[in-house]
Length: 308
Image: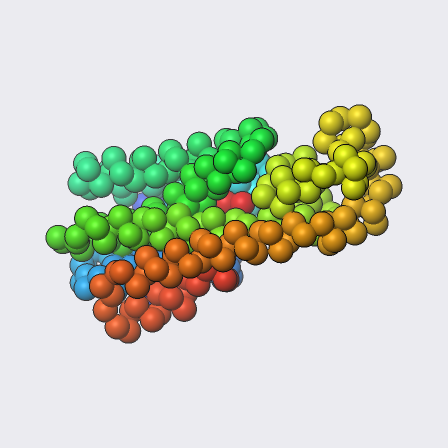
């Protein structure tokens, strides 16, 4: 994370987290986020600079991006009850809730005084992400169409938010360029989510989506033929057997995942979105060296969204 962005984040936390212990805890949360592969504030900054922007407010905007993503990341982990090693999962839940409220207050305070049209767009993007997250945690996905709609809202909207925080500070940016960046972000969000779903369906611990009875893209593929090819999976999803009984079929299920072609199918779908993302990127009039840094930071093959 850039020094200017870190200083802005600390300024925000000092302003809105008045309790010394809570302030210290939130700064620990920020340090934890810096260990991730994707630094969201860099995405905001690079979009801004590659479009020729030079706003003195860019570090502040990038810090708001980090703050909002941290808030949503913590909520996601609390909902899924995974990533148990994270500092927001190991402490007193009541204190973590207060930390979330402080982040929420900071987000409102920092975003509230800006351009009303920008605030409206940010609210729309974050509401879309929450809509997608709600569909995910309530297991509302039943078809591939449901899946892609959920992922575009849940993950794509967050990437669009990070990009918007950068390009909204570039005056007179062409509407077509903004639309291309928004669609690019949606494509990359889908690619990243599929990456996560492919990984999760191949593990056999609590993070395995099969144990959660999720219907991700690879699982939807598996369920098409599971009645004949892997009865234990079909019975588990129908509620006819318990999780304990399902776990007795671990080897059989993992072999079915490996041999079914679901991984290869997901890779084909990803390639379509990657091709579209690259086509969109080529249409954006980007300035060097920021264009190259942007693509190094956010490549469809390696991008990971926090809300998965």
